[in-house]
Amino acid sequence: MTDMDTWEPAPTVGELQLQERSSLRRVVGLSTELDDVTEVEYRQLRLEQVVLVGVWTSGSAAQADASLAELKALAETAGSAVLEGLIQRRDRPDPATYIGSGKAHELREVVLATGADTVICDGELTPAQLNALEKVVKVKVIDRTALILDIFAQHATSREGKAQVSLAQMEYMLPRLRGWGEALSRQAGGRAGSNGGVGLRGPGETKIETDRRRIRERMAKLRREIKGMKQARDTKRGARRRSGVPAVAIAGYTNAGKSSLLNALTDAGVLVQDALFATLDPTTRHGVLTDGRDVVLTDTVGFVRHLPTQLVEAFRSTLEEVVDADLLLHVVDGSDVMPQRQIDAVREVLREVAGEREASLPRELLVVNKIDAADPVVLAQLRVALPEAVFVSAHSREGIDELLERMTQLITAGDVEVSALLPYDRGDLVARIHAEGTILETEHVAEGTRMIARVPGALAGALSSFAVQCRTING
Image (tube, rainbow, N blue to C red):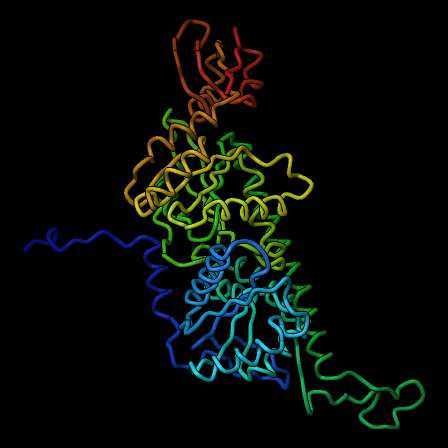
């Protein structure tokens, strides 16, 4: 046997990340709660055997079931085993215990019967609701926001991603700190005694107040760090824009197949995992359109229904990659039972991120992914409801060529067809035409290089002094 017979291709970056993520996983039955080093309970997550509970306030029963199914997927992504799921029909969540005192006692019976040690609520609970419900069910209670934050904390790998997640966690944690016993005792004002002197005798600061102050100081430091990282990201993005290479952002619901699509379009080899929020750190890769033009594609963090406000704010600098792109590939999971809800949730987050710049959001191209795993009836309905969408399978590569063709049409819409005579000492412009445009004709004459090409508007402006004829191409 030769060395060639035993040769195997080197693993991609994504494969290495997946192996690393799998090597450190939560094991059912073993506590994952960190030891609290202070006297204040920080509500560290302890996700082992869990019971899910949701409040159905509007919509159909199918939508309520789909919402709880998504919560189940989130809980399993975080490393827990789901034992039971309960839904209560109410006009609005109970302001005291989220599900009402009677249902809270019924939930306690379910917890005892299943042996669960955690209850996860499908909504963001106030600190008072968490505390009151915990007193009734007598096990740890967390809400949807804390669950998503925990998943983000597990999956963040870059320095910027970890800082963003830490900031979001602290913003969520700050109003939910609790203490008891000695934790509520006060430090002496002034000198350590009751005779500190005039102006120095006072109640001092409780331990929980000290913790809050330290968290605020840490949050201020993280904001400064993220601001510095944002400047570096803006510098890189500005350099890409000055190069004239079109930028395409890939956005969509979590686990819709955005990273798989990036791999199919560019052979990037990024991490692909059948889990929610597998990708947190933006990945930018080089691609080529059907006309040979270069393009950069950026895979962004996935969205979810009711994405926590803390995460939207913390990841704002990252999500701005979408706002500043030339084209937005909005990826939809075609195998989902309610894909339209995914589309609405993603567009809501995009509007929140864009803010006053909503009008400048890039042109959107809907990409329905996972058609190889989708229900044919649902696909037929989507083709009618979304006539402008492209239907693909990143796994089997079905429809990828059509997607590249549509991307080329949208990016080149508004290009200018230029006929120009460039002197031989302007090789820089010739190189830009080759990199950013499409060459239709080239002829070398005594005065220079005569070229007919389709180029972006910005490059057409730079060629205006050498242009013989210009014609704008309608999209």
